[in-house]
Image 1: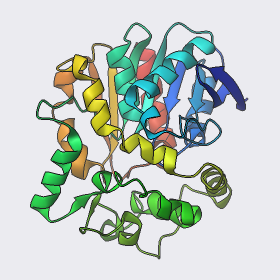
Image 2 (image 1 turned 60 degrees about the horizontal axis):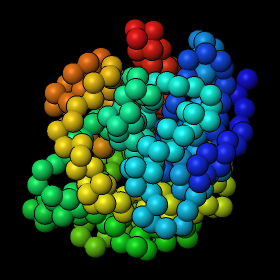
Image 3 (image 1 turned 90 degrees about the vertical axis):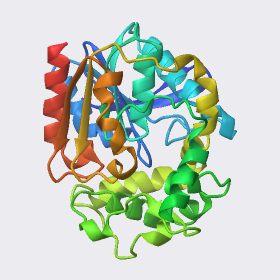
Length: 319
């Protein structure tokens, strides 16, 4: 039976969605999501004999967290997961992440392979630390060449989240619709914006809920983001350069534990992170896959729950 509970950890009280007993599988959501994005996986993994746990991450939903931007670095996010594993009474687990949760999962395995003994990334391949300097300046240089701004660079503005807070329902509807596999290709976002145009303004007001997102499920998101706001989630993006500074010790490090990667054929993230798919085997030598789901968009575990469940269970049983 799936339950929601709150677990005290160092500096946070993390709200988790949880079911099952057995080996621990930790499921990390991305932007703009919550633990509830993993509901189908929590149920399937529990039925298969695993202890499945999906937290609302730092800055999100029932967990919330600090107000300072600098308290949302990759070290904080990995540290939260380390402490959650301990608080759950385990000494090892498999970590799975989607979207922004994937970089957190990859770094869990990179930093603590003793604790995170296998890793699965959905949508976002592992992106190794670059040698050329912090990433935001590089993103802006690419944007200048293309005559467009990558939304990640636009999110650096300290008030970029305000438009999302003004109307959470419309913001979330546009986000989900514009990255969904069922949305017409011409309407899907590429992640690149006309200079000076906010991301929400580039998405049609015709946006509707994707086929997998019921009104009741959508309302769960709306309620959570209305209560907690978007600043914390945006602060993850605002720490990208700080993360680069903090992870110099990981330069050229590889992921040595077994790894899985799954991506949707039409995931817009592939427009700006897809190049890392080709080199993923170099950085994760024990890679199982990758798997590209035909016709799928970005929200893999919700768009294609049966396929994602099958791949996760095959991976877990192969370990």
